[in-house]
Length: 171
Image (cartoon, rainbow, N blue to C red; front, side, top):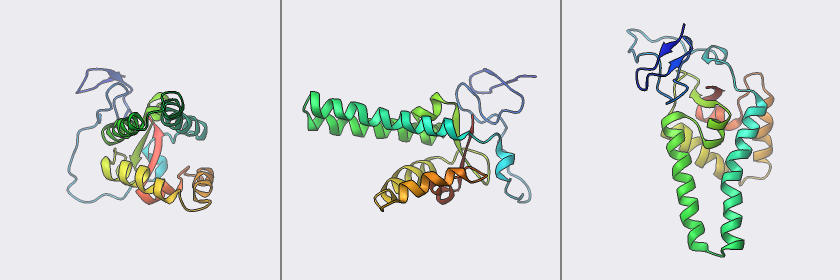
């Protein structure tokens, strides 16, 4: 039986954690009287498949790199490049903060959630840790390769997921 989103009114499956239209949390926020144990990764929902994560990552890189080359080599404008990079970062950071999705993740219907709560982590884990810190760690030789290979773990969590305490699930 579909459940109506309290924010936008979209019909969602009764087991949906987030609205598939606006990303609103479907269950009411409750403060438990006593702490509950952290859910297992498998309890958070269906893990995003590896191929969806890979293609979403490629889409995100393409939205960064393709316009960047166009601006640099066709328009020959460094100042326009700086504006584009700032705009790209702001769009991705806003999406990650509000919905736990980048442009690529939104296109492939996957989202980032916190392992402990199953909810969107917001700015610090999604942007500062997964995007900024992981980008800086990418400067270490072979880090990016090792990070990507962690996707073959049973819980499909890469190094950046482990550092941020996140997991990628189907939206």
